[in-house]
Length: 631
Image (cartoon, rainbow, N blue to C red; front, side, top):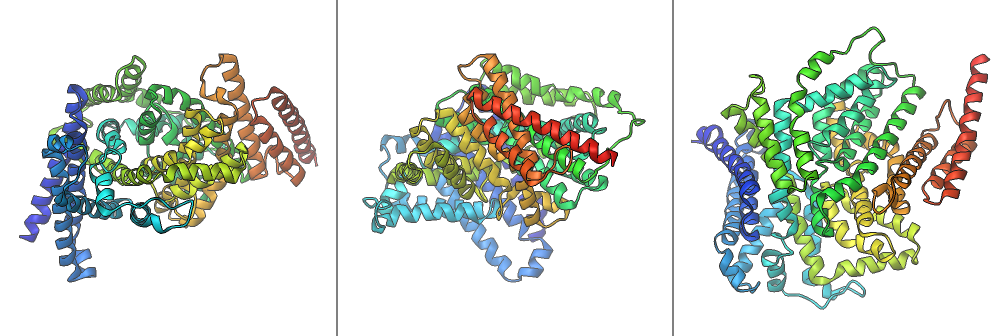
C-alpha cells in the first residue's frame, strides 16, 4: 500500500495537478481569465495540492523514515489535515464565489474557521518551500492586527476582532486572494511555463554558449561568461535562485578551473544571477506586480528597467575584470582555439520564442497572450530536433518543472496578501512612511539610505516578489512624498529588495551558489556584497538622474545619463576593489569614490568635475604602471 502510494498514486496526483495548473494558465491566456475569486482560488488550490502531495511523498523516503521513525506517521497525518483544510477553504471560495460576492465581504462563523485553516496550511506550505522568515513576518502582522491596540503610539491602532481580521485576510480583496496572488495566477505562471519550456528545449544552454563564445578570450572569461549568461538567463527565469541553479553548474566550475577561489566563484555567480531579475523582457514576478501597484503598463516598466539593468551588468563586468587582473586570472581560451559557431548558430532557432514574446509586447498584446504564443512557438520549434521534441512524457516533465517554479512565487504572493491585508486594515503603511520622512528630516539622501536599509532587512529570506510587495506598501510612499516619481520610487525599492538575495545573514542566491561551489555560504554572501557593492549605487542614479529611466527626455539626455552612470559605477568598482590599472593607494581610492558620487548627480557641472577627476586618475595610474614596468 505504502509503495503504491509513493510510486504511483502521489506521482500521478503531482503530475496531474501540474498539467492542470499549466493547462488552466494557457486556457485563460488565450480565452480570457475567469472572475478573480475563481481564477485565484483555483490557482492556490492546485499549488497547495502540489506542495502537500510532494511533502507526503517525501515522508515515504527510506532515509527520512530511518531518521524520524514514528514521527513520519505523525507528519503524514498532519500533511493530510493541512491539505484537507486548504482544499476546503480554497474550494469554498472557488465554488461559492457568487454567494460570497453577494454578501459584500460579510463573513460567517464557519468562514472564520475556513480562514484560520487556510492561514495555517498556507504558513506550513511556505515553511516547506520558502522557509521560516516570511512565515514569521506574516504571523507578526496578524498578531499586530489582533493586538496592536495595546501598543504605544504611533504604532497603536483602534483594535480589530478575530472576525474582522479573518474577513480582511480570507474574504477581503486585499488579503490572501488579493492582487499579488492574482498576478501569480495570470502573468507569472505563463512566463514561468515559457521559461521552463525554454530550459527543457535547450534554449538556456544556447544562451550560455553565446556568453562563453563572446567572453572566452577575455581575462577572467569564465566569470564574465557567468555575468553575460546570467543576464541572458534572466530573460527566461526571472528569479535569482533559479538563475544560480541554471547557470551556476556551468560557470562556477569554469571559474574554479581558471584560478578563482571557490568563494569568489560562488559570489560572482550569485550577484550576476540576482541582477537577472531586473533584465527585460521577462524580469521577475515583481515587475508584473509593480505594473498593478503603479497602474503602469508592463512594457513601460520593462523599458524603464532596461538601462538600469545594463548599467548593473556593465558595473559588475568592471568589478570582475578588475578582480581578474588583480589576481592574474588567465584567459579561458587561447588565440588558437576556435569557437564552434556553426553548432551554436545551428541551435539558435530554439531562441525564436523570445523575439515572439518581445514583439507581441511591443505591439500592445497582453503579457498572457504574448506568453501563450511564445510557448506555442517554443513547442513547435522543439519538434525540429528529436532530442528536444516535446513528447507527451516531456510535456508532463515540463509542466512539473514549471509548477515547481510557480509554487514559491504563488505561496509568497498569498502570504504577502496576508501582510497587505493587515497593512490596509490597520493603516500601518502610512505610519511607517511618515516615520521614514520624520527620521530623514525631509532629506532625500538620508531617506533613500533608510529606505534601502529597510528593504534589505525586510527582504532577507524572502523571494523578490514578496519582498517587493512588502516594501512597496510600506516605504515606497515615503519616497513619493519626498518628490521622487512613482515609477522611480518603486524601481528603487524593487532594486533594493532584489539585492537582499545576496545580503547576509540570509542570502538566498549566495546559499544556492554555495551548494555548487562547495564554499562557505556566509563568506560567499560577504564577497557577493563586495562584488555587488558598486551595483548598490545604481538605484540612486535613477532617482537623482531620472533620464536613465527614459521618461519624458531626449535621447541626448538619456545617452549622457547612461554614460555617466556607467562611469560612476566603474569608479565605485575601482574604489571598492582598490585596483584600476594597478593597485590603488588610499588617496587614489578616495578620489575614485568622489568621482563616483559626483557622477550620480544629473547636474552637468558635477558630471564635468567627475570626468576631470577620472581623466587625471587614468593618466596618473597609467603613468605609475609604466614606471613600475620599467623598474
